[in-house]
Image 1 (cartoon, rainbow, N blue to C red):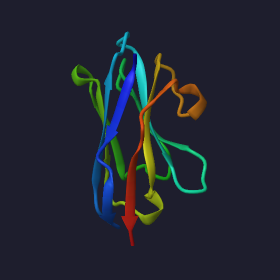
Image 2: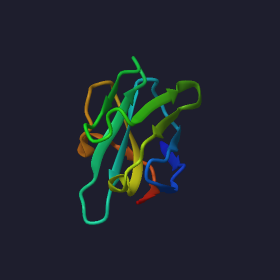
Image 3: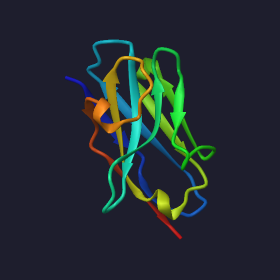
Image 4: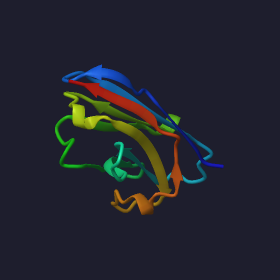
Length: 124
C-alpha cells in the first residue's frame, strides 16, 4: 500500500525557514507526482506546490512563488518543501499527496494518496 509520511512542521517566527519532508513507500510505478497542500483553520485545502518524478517539473502557487522550493530525491521516494521568508498567513497544516501519472495538476481531487499532515505555525 502507498504510504506518505509528512514531517518537519513546527513553530517559527515570521521571516524564518522550515523544511518539510514527505517520505513515500509502497510505490508501484516510477511515474508519479507529489504535491504539497495546506489547510488553514476555516479554509479549504489548497495546492502549494508539486513535482513530477518523470521530468522534475514543478509548480508553485502564486502565494509561495519565490519563497518555497520543492525538490525530490527519487531514490528515497522523498520530496522536500523548503519554506523561506515565512509569513503568518503560511500557518496551516501541510499535507503531501501523490498520484500515479505525470500531468500537471494541483487540484485536491486529482491526488489519490494522502499523508497525515504536519502543522506549521508562523508567529508574527
